[in-house]
Length: 119
Figure 1 (cartoon, rainbow, N blue to C red):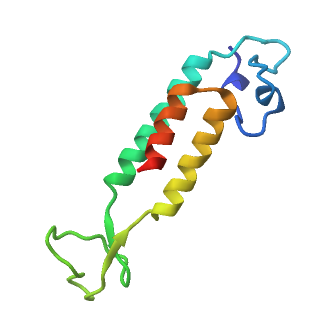
Figure 2 (spheres, rainbow, N blue to C red):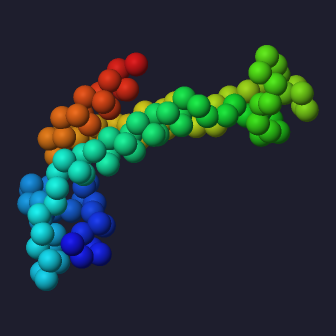
């Protein structure tokens, strides 16, 4: 494989959208391994989901990270806490993965992201 084999845009690359899964570099022309691609995307989705659920809470006023497990308010400024990543932003990112999965017929990725979005 050449260095350009690793730089793919599954949403914009016309050849990939037409299911032409070969490296576009003329000297290379190697077929892409769809299973490896799907597994890499699946790992990204699972890691993003895990990080979303394990994210820190931060104060809405002073932006300090919550460090007391039972505190309802910030100890510095009495502000309330919220998640660092907004739920809508997370869901929009998961929707992009679902769209790629549907378009490229990645069934495992489709099942995983559809399940995340259904919760």
